[in-house]
Structures are given as structure tokens and as C-alpha cells.
Image 1 (spheres, rainbow, N blue to C red):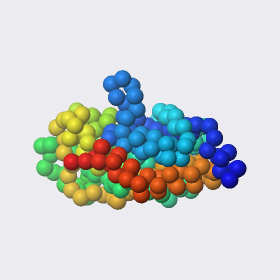
Image 2 (cartoon, protein in one colour):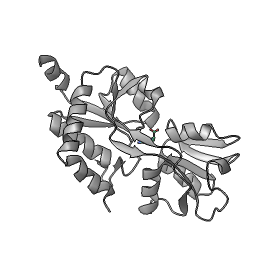
Image 3 (tube, rainbow, N blue to C red):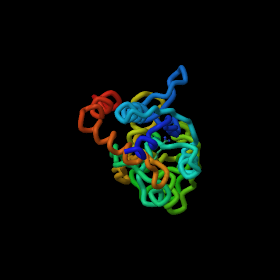
Image 4 (cartoon, protein in one colour):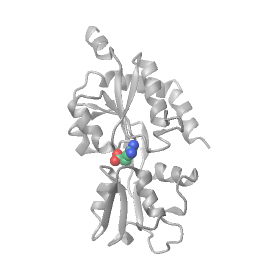
Length: 229
Ligand code: ARG
């Protein structure tokens, strides 16, 4: 019991790359908002732990966890085997998948097969970037954020973007990016997890609180707020 109390003491600094609405973004006043942000705040309330967010590049989150400069990372981060070799993940909290976005008037690209040799824009360090890297003869350009990759497509400088479907669909639905559409099937099924340093004493506290807010309806309220119809 004493050891668990020690693990919870002090705030948890939680890293996030905040240009990924509706999971994390900055409001006009610079405040962090989004599904992941509300989720971590609810977890903090449930566990009695103060949460402090720190903005980091997406490809800097795992190094920061490994260096121990942050206690956790929440960033629509897909649980992958490769990442799980270097950090620990919470139980999955969201089901997503990769989607192809193309220009609205494009009738040629319809699937992953038709991306061969095309110009593909992605966010650096993401599962979308990894997927694009495996496409034959594709010219992949990497950007610091998903909106920048989508803008490259909207500007006509890329043929396609491979990015998480919920984030791309949100950019289209909100009008943040114009003139683009999603085509074909989802390329993957992916599950997001909250990452912590390997063997963190906080992981059990995190998972317990996450399970409690799933069971008591708080998770559903947050889900409705960001994804409700
Ligand atoms: N789910 C994808 C991955 O884990 C993309 C996540 C991007 N998140 C972000 N906050 N930019 O690679």
C-alpha cells in the first residue's frame, strides 16, 4: 500500500502531440482540448492524481518515456508490438484504423494497391508513415503533424495521405481541410493505448482508474461529447 501511494504522489506529466483533433488539439486560447485530454483528466480524478500535460513532437513521446521525463503519453497512440518492446501500454481505450485520403476529384486512387508510385504525405513516426513506407515506389513525404500532411494533399502537392480514419474524418467534417475525401476500406484495425515507461509503478493505477471510468459511465460521457451524433 505504501508503495502504491508513493507511485501516485506528485503530478503525472503526460506528453501529447496536440495537433490531432478530436483526440488532442489546442483551442483558440491555447488550452488543450479533446477526447484524450478529457480521458486523462477523468483518470486523474478517479485515481486522485494531478495531471499536467506537456506538448511534444509525436516522435519524441517514446524517447521522453524512455528518458523518464514524462510519466505517461496520450496521443491517439496505436498499441504496436514494436512500441510495446520499449514502453508499457494501458488496456486499449479506442478502436481506430488507417484510412486513405485523396483529392475530392480523384477517381484513380481507390485502394492501397492503386497507391503504387504515388506521392503520399504522412505524419512522422506514425503507423500511417510505416504503412506508406511499405508501398512500392511511393514517394513519401513526412510532416510534423497530421493537419500539415492533409494540407499538403489539399494544396495538390501530394496524391494521398495515410492517417488515422477518425482524425482525417474529423478534419473533413469540421471543414479544417477542404477538397479531400476518404476512399476505400480501412487499411488496418488499430487500438489506442496510454503509454508509460517500462515497468512503471503507475501502470496499475492507470489501468484501474481507466477500468473504473469505463464501468461507471464517465468514458461513455466523454465519448459522446467528442463522437456523439
Ligand atoms: N495512431 C497513429 C500512431 O500511433 C497516429 C497517432 C498520431 N497522434 C498524434 N497525436 N499526432 O502512429
